[in-house]
Length: 132
Image (cartoon, rainbow, N blue to C red; front, side, top):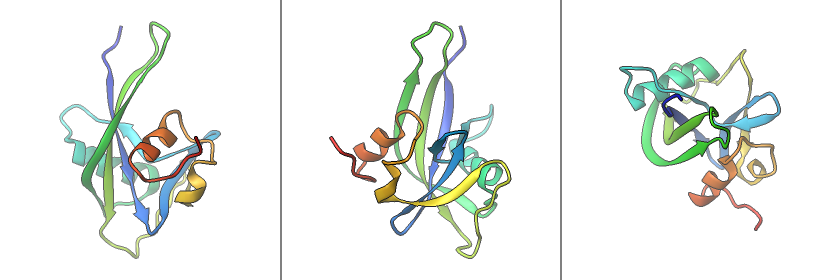
């Protein structure tokens, strides 16, 4: 049995759009595990650089958290900590060779194939509207 993993998720907004990336068939926020000895803020900055090529972004305020516990005995248990993120150089353009990266309008986000729990999290925090 493994210990729960701690991940950080970076929410970058530009007007009414979110910076999201597509991995396989799902869209998500930049998201990655926290390394041993790394602060949450350092992890947010590293994830943004590794996943979307932003070396001039910093961690902003904490938004909230979500937890994923897989039903199977050896499934992953992940605690995701969501943070606002800020691009210091507004001329910087996110780019990535790892995944498709795009600014997604908030009104379209709920209609995309988002990773499990992301639409609910964004809706619960007033960032998108979802149909009931």
